[in-house]
Image 1: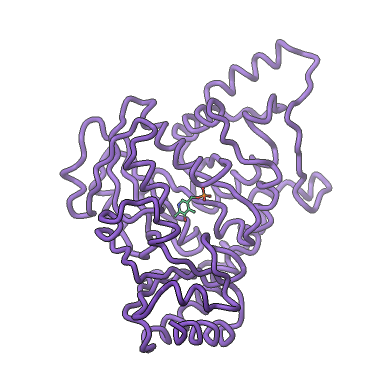
Image 2 (image 1 turned 180 degrees about the horizontal axis):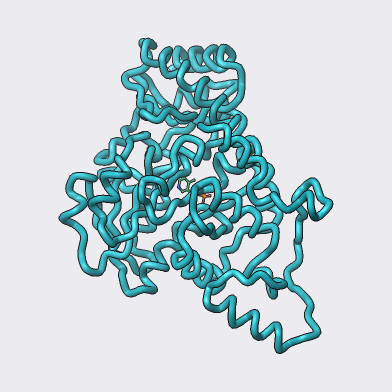
Length: 372
Ligand SMILES: *Cc1c(COP(=O)(O)O)cnc(C)c1O
């Protein structure tokens, strides 16, 4: 992490505040924006209809919102893209990305397992009109077709933390846009855009918000992709709420500090888990990070029931440490055979390390493992 990342996490999307005489980002909750000049409003609507950003007054809250745009500018900058488009949740961002491919007449998606459970479901079910081919990074090149609109990967992947070589994949994808779900790494640990990915997606609900109290999703990308995503967002209505954008901007300020601190704690826990007799295997990505996955010898449900400091809950990226059993919870929706094929074993636990003291966390984890 560069010092510039820490600086920009605090200031991106907020550079104009001092000149406005403001300190905190203004929260604009308006659903509509009055205008006495309906000819001008019609002109602005025509501009918005193309998916373009208009520097003028907003028209309606489903099209754009000034607080949401601040968050979008911040993420675009942190991920190193020109644009970002924010959604009501990570899944709304995933859905819009798939619909954008379908709308261009390219309904075929190639994806690498594992991915987040609901992403797996939406691809496998074909709910949005896409057709998926599951591939490995090695076989991916031979699965691309003329109607392939998107290659979709998560790295590190949910929940096994397996990694994909983004630069190598970009070389294989050719003209087909590569979407990387960067939720687990955050721009602090990995910037897929620098490696050539066309779209970088986040469940902002996780590390970007960082406090377990806001849902959101965002896609950082180029101008053309952003215009298509805005058109789809306007049509389908999945825009981020302005209060969520406000909270996300606040969360971004501490993102580098939170991710760095939690990663350091996670690395210590990984070392100790590797030595623990109750643990069969530990999965920890090469890029590091606050997520740890491990397979227990005993009953994983007993560990979940026994933790007292660690929060037994789905989701991740919060200030508190969270643990969950992917086979029952986050990846329950994925068919058992597919789940096992992707390395999501029944003994696997996924832990998102928070900001607590490392010794307190270890004490809790150790007693919970003994209870199993
Ligand atoms: C949680 C998550 C999502 C979905 O995000 P929501 O905000 O819950 O809709 C997508 N991808 C990954 C990797 C996730 O962890």
